[in-house]
Image (cartoon, rainbow, N blue to C red):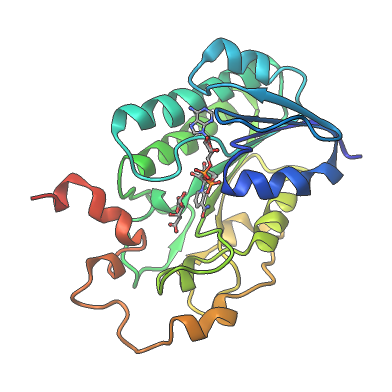
Length: 267
Ligand code: NAI
Ligand code: 15L
């Protein structure tokens, strides 16, 4: 197999559960980790339950690993204190440990909420300034900056995947644009893992949806070509020509309703 040992953090989560099975073909040993219970180790697995905020535990977690898929952490808007522990301290611990143990590459599950305050009428490339839509988005911007720093300083490579909406199906009209099928996510991760040199790359993760906000020309070296499209779900959210809707703030910004959790929209 191409890798001896890969670490997957967040392995008990929605995406982690999918990846836990799919990553087996890439590696002799898949080390799966989460704060939550992962059940017993399956064939070819090592299971490590730990808190990403625990620096000593993460140092041990990363030992002997060639590639990290860092998917663990808080995945929605939450208090700064909670996000700080899981996403800021946690991601820092992963990078410090990766550097210490000379890990070659990290694939970081970043998010479209790094740019959620752009309008749904804007077209973006990866080098445009981040415009996070909450503390969660800010923490993902931290991960993107931190990984840039580790690459410039130490040569540790990272692909930051600004995942759109990776679910079985879009749950609302906005997700017709941000939808990323599980197969396309996996293909993007394959590109991120196997492209010979990635340096520090930021790539948007969306399927080949009819409406697009994100242009991946700056990540062309990854060769990512999505195959799926949200069009197969068009019947769920028929195009009424009323998007963005003037009376619905969640359709004005790319981050959708995440922006409603920010202090500026509280009474
Ligand atoms: P999820 O919330 O289902 O999974 C995250 C996992 O991280 C959970 O199992 C949780 O127990 C674990 N975790 C949380 N705090 C932790 C800590 N302190 N220490 C160790 N583990 C901890 O989220 P999902 O949907 O699977 O997303 C995975 C990653 O991808 C997350 O980093 C998320 O921010 C990112 N992402 C996901 C998107 C999606 O559409 N599913 C979109 C954009 C980004
Ligand atoms: C994210 O970053 C979240 O982790 C996920 O739960 C979805 O809300 C997704 O973005 C989205 O924007 O649809």
